[in-house]
Length: 344
Image (cartoon, rainbow, N blue to C red; front, side, top):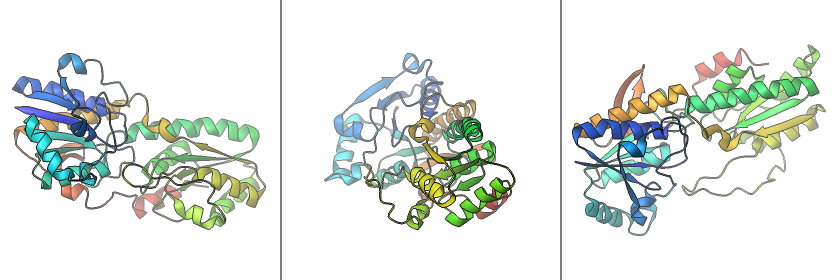
């Protein structure tokens, strides 16, 4: 049996743990594992590598992915479906395990519908894939963001400043919400629920009246309603990524400037950016990635194609990829309302 593995989309802590688990689980069943270099683009370039025990030794604690990644979609290329099937037929893969986020799972579903035997493994620091309680990478990102808030607290208090921390989260504010609660932020702004600028400055003023001369604001990069409320705010060019989505980043600077103008309090912004998904994965993400990898091989042996590994109530299971991409898993109102009790 010949099993292929690829990592697609943005890099994420825990990818190597999944690859390692797949290889170590497959070899006892005499399954040959081939790595596709650079995501789906590797099929176009014909770049592959044999994955064996030496290849995955000592990688569980490494960030990124030893296979490389890209945001390449075969189905956006001319005659993409036909070329994909032709090139895969020459490699004689029995199945492909696609490790990726929401966008990558859409590609996996298209490949499945085209006749490719696909197994999905969900990864994203945004934690926004439907049908699974957690995706690996999220825990590491939250830990990094929480540490950043802890560090900003000391300088904010020392200089009596308003500190705005911008974290990742295009449509879902899980990182902002979890790190904001854990780090004791005074306001958390996420894409799911609009927050008026007057409410933000109101919290800051109330804290000032109580003798708290600093505040910590956490904002998810996708909270674009803030940008719309700030007049003449198009201060940066919005480019597109390889999936055709608007590149985000910079809303924190706009918010900090607006807060300073409205309140007169000195404000500074920090954009955490790619730091959130770089470096060593947390123990939780290493374990979750490992469990996903082991289960993916079981799915392969049971010919459970067109499905994605998932975790529900700490039990590893699987769901159809179609269900996983049916909607985004966003922050629910109940969770947000509970968190709001601690803000301000």
